Structure formats: C-alpha cells, structure tokens
Image 1 (cartoon, rainbow, N blue to C red):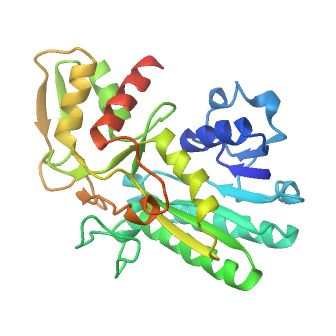
Image 2: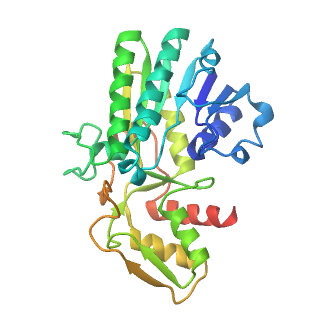
Length: 309
C-alpha cells in the first residue's frame, strides 16, 4: 500500500512506520517536528517515499495525498494536562488539523483513514472496564473533547465521501521513544533528585498501560478483520496499575534505595485527569487480537527502554 503517516516522527508514529516499511509499504511521513524527533526516523529515512516537515495547519503538504491508499493520522497535541491552559491551541492542532487531513483525502480520492483517539473520550465512565458502546461520552479534558470531535468529523466524512475509517481509543501507551507521560516524567525527576519523588494526587490513581509494540500490532490487525464504514476499537491491556506502583517499579529498575514519596493530595493529578481508567478490549480480542502484556509488564518494559535511551 501507499500510506501517509502524519506524526510519523513521534513516539507511536515512528513505531508504526517501522512496521509499515517492514511489510513493504510505500510510506510518506508528514511531521511538524514539534514533538517528533528525527532520531526516531534516522534508521528508516532512506526507505521512506518522502518526508515532509510541515504543520498540518499550514499548506504545502496536500499534494502528497495523490495516489495514496491509506492515511494513518497520528499527529496531535498529546498534552492532556496542558490542554486546560492552551485549549484553543489543542483544538486547532487536533480538530482543525484532522478536518484539513480529511479535506486533503476528499480532494485526492483517498478512501481509508486510521485514526488514533483516546480513552479520555469516555470521561469518568461509570462502567469499568469501559466498552466502545458506553454512553454518555462526556470528556472532562479539552484533549478528550478534541479527540471526540475528531471522531465525529471522521464519521461524517466517511458517510458523505464514501471513506472508511478505523478509530482506536488508546489506553496509556508506553515504550521506547516516548518523551512525555508519567513514566518519562518520574524517571527524569529521579535522575535530578534520586532521594525524593513528588507524586501528583494521592498515588491511588489506576489506569491501563500497553506496550507500544502491542498497540501498533493492534492498529495493523484491525483493518484485516473489520470492514465497516467506521470501525471503533479500544486498545489497551486487561488490567491496570496504580501511580504509586509505577513509582515503585521505577525506583526498583533504577536500583535506588531510600527514596521518599511525597503526594500533592486529592484523587487526581490535575484538572481533567481521569483517576480510574480501564478499557474493555473484548471487541478486538474476539476478532483474534491479544494484548500480549499486562499493564505492569508494559510499564516495566517502558522504564527499561527509557533508561537505555
């Protein structure tokens, strides 16, 4: 296939590029390089059909959509915590950019999109584990709301333009090349001060984590077994792990001793934080996919990867 990966120099996007190239696809990457890193693509740069350094809010990249079979739209502002203070920026980077990608697809006759959404579209779900059909969907962060708006626009374009879409609602994805999130943040804090770690909230917040390798495998697998106009899947592990346990695992993997934990208090880390999240992944499992790792396994693998980088 001839594929475009927006955000292909980022954490998940670059792992996806690895797999697409390994199976022989023709791959074009578009990335603003705001959070993407060229080092994530260095080993593949010669194998890419093209690399375009561009912001999706600007022009000049749309012509790359000619003769493309599928768009993997990964590019987004991933800052859930920061979305409360930069709401309009997050809206533009997520919703406006997605509509511009859909317009480019419409103009050039591209019929397939894979889109990375998020568990935060569910808000504080009363049903845990949370299935894809849960309602009402009431996000409590601007980030979650922006992703839900993207899902709605993708559904509308699929219906009106004869497109097909696979929408993935992710748990917390972890692994090598990650540059944000709790594991990365804790490692950086402990490198600066190996005797004390501040933990936002009360440390009891518990969420599902999944290794990026399993995540990308699910992204590639679902289109081979699900062929509706709009296909929505949760992607995550079948358990969860607490924030305090993550801190303990990092201390263990860094071989530190006598580390004291301090807590900022409250049942969540920040405004818009969902303190308890676990996705029901039965829908994709019934089609043959398996997570492969527990949340704790995924966290431990990510810690080791970050420490080695």
